[in-house]
Image 1 (cartoon, each protein chain N blue to C red):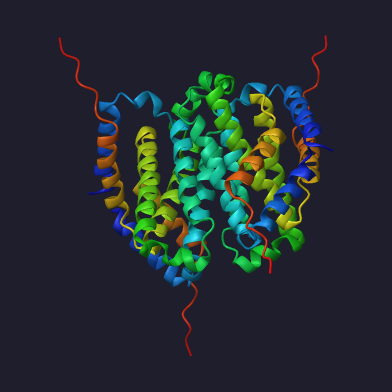
Image 2: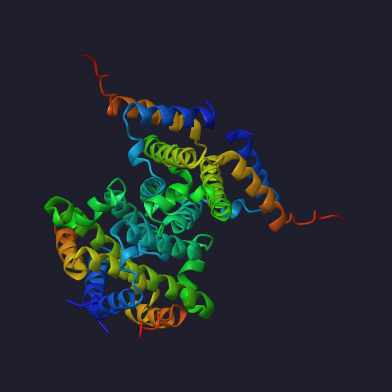
Length: 109
Length: 109
Length: 109
Length: 109
C-alpha cells in the first residue's frame, strides 16, 4: 500500500458513487478541516502525559487511527482533485526547511 | 519517495535539531490544525470556479503545494510520534466506508 | 444577556464543577478549534445555494445554533482565562481594518 | 460596545466595501476556521506553563488580541449573515449543559 494506491482507491470510491461533484477543492478543504477538528477533540482535555500514552489504550487507539485515516484520506483526495503531488511537495518542503533551520554545529572539544 | 521515507526524513530532521521535546502529540495536533488553517485561507474567498482553477496559477500552485506539504509533514510526524501506521489506518477506513456506503446497483434494462 | 454575562456564567459553570484545571489556554484553543470543525462539517457538502438557505431549515438551524454557541462559549472562556477583553480587541481590530482597507470613494459625476 | 454594536459595525464595514458577495456562509466558516488556525499557531509550541503566562508578554498579548478579535469578528459576521442570535444560542447551550453536567452535590458533614 502506497499513497498512490490510496489515492487511486479514493478516486474509484468517489467515482463509483458519483461523488465527484461534491469533491470540489473548497468542500474538500472544509472536510479536511472538520476531520482535524475531530482529531483535536480526542486530545483536547488530555494532560500532556495522558496524550503521550493515549495511543497505548485500545479504545483511544481505534479512535485516533480513525481520525488520522480521515485526515489522510481527505488530504490525498484534495491533492488528487487539484492535481498536486503530495509526496514531492512535502519532500521539497523539507529541503527548504533544511536551509531555513540549519543543523546546529556538532559540539567538539 | 514513499510516505515511510518522508516519515524517516522528518524524524531525522527533528532529532538533528533536538526538536523531539516540542513534538508532543498535543503540540503536533495543534500544528496540524494551524497548517490546515493556512490551507483554508488560500481558498476561503475564491468562488467555486476560481477554486477549481487555482492550481493552474503558478503563484497559487506554489502556495497550495507549500501548505499541502506542511499538512502532510505534521500528519506524518504525529503518526510517527504516536506509533501509528497512517497508510494501514487509511486503508482500513476505506474498507469500512465501502460497507457503510455501498455502491449503487448498476443501471440495467 | 451580554457577552460579559455569558463569560461570568461560563466561569461559574466551570468553578461549580472544578473544571478550571482543564481550562488551560492550550486546551481551550484546541476545544475552540474542535468546535469550529463541527460547524465546518455542517456546511462542507452543501452547495453555496444550500448554505445560503440552511438556516431556514429547522433541523439545520438547531445544529448550527448549537455549534455557533459552542464556538462562542469556548472563545469567551479562553478570553476570560487569559484576561483578554474580547469586545475591546475586536473593536480595535475594526479600527485597524478601516485604515487597512479604506472605503472606496463614492461614485460622483 | 456590545456584541450587537460589533455586528452592526461589521455589517456597515462590509457594505461600504461591497464585500457582502464574498461573505457567504461557506466562505465565512472557512475564514473563521483560518483565524482559529492562526490563534492555534501562537500557542502550539508553548509549554503549558508558557501558555499560562503568554498573555502577560506585551508582544504575545498584541498577537493574541489580534487573533481573538479576528475569530470573534468572523463569528459575529457569520451569525449576522445567517440571521442567528449568537448570545441567545450560547445562553441556551449553557442551559442544556447545566442539565447534561449536573453540579456535584456540595460536600457536607
